[in-house]
Length: 379
Ligand SMILES: Cc1cc2nc3c(=O)[nH]c(=O)nc-3n(C[C@H](O)[C@H](O)[C@H](O)COP(=O)(O)O)c2cc1C
Image (cartoon, rainbow, N blue to C red; front, side):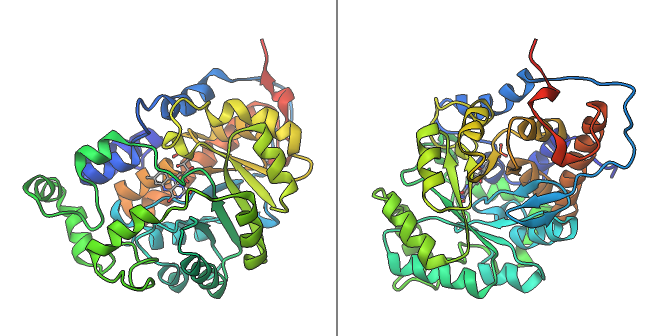
């Protein structure tokens, strides 16, 4: 197969490789999907200043995120059910990220467990925490992340109630998938995916199954999970988690400047300006459109990252120019994974890295740590 040249090519390949219910799970936003679309569209509105006759030799994308060295400032975002895009998906994506030299973030709602990922990686990865009503379970997750030597905790703040995604409801999404005629047909038409799944025992939420009393079998697992996200989550809980964790803490899902201010005062180390990839509050602004005022306000006190809508190296560069210290990508790596497994994640990272490098050069810069608003064309 020829190597894909764009994230969109990986997306088209993934559509052909992954059963519809799981491809749709990745490629969906809540309700009208307006915010999901805006995340991508608003990047296209930002224009770059082309500079010429400047030295473009010896370029470097290397920098740090949260004090960790990175090959480029692009981390893999936490995504649920990644092991349904491809068998053992989280383990493969973590290995690809480690090899490339960028952070991998494991979701609470992953298929492979914290221990599974730790068993196939050498460097510490990051763990994303959803806060459940059962605080004993939350404590247990934190202890397991510590035991696995995770080097940062990403606390997600924007999913205490679930934004409705029509496609998931229509598809009857579940992990493992149901065995109705519709679901069997969707899987049978994706034989390579099926072969992979037959070769692994990891088919359900392994951070949860077997770790909560009374939640051993699958029917109790799905109802427990649906009922567990705590709608009372507050800044006091953030403080409790920060103390309990004791390591680097990233707050994910900040979209408003007032929340950014509270986050900067909370003692956390970083925030992710994010609307959950347009999967939660439909009608919220795109992440890139609110990044600049937030970074201007708190960027000198707390590390500011962003995610949502990044599909190219040009997008990464624009976010960095507007004040992000680094970005996260969700769908780009999921499409790579669904399309080509571990190699597909590497391909996604290579595509973004090459585009970022060339774009930086054409803007007249050699060092990724040296970008600023003056590189954007303001009309
Ligand atoms: C399929 C999918 C599952 C996701 N699951 C989680 C999750 O479990 N926890 C979380 O904090 N964010 C989750 N997110 C949001 C991502 O972390 C990230 O904010 C988003 O994907 C960024 O947008 P992008 O996909 O356009 O890059 C998920 C996103 C997708 C696409």
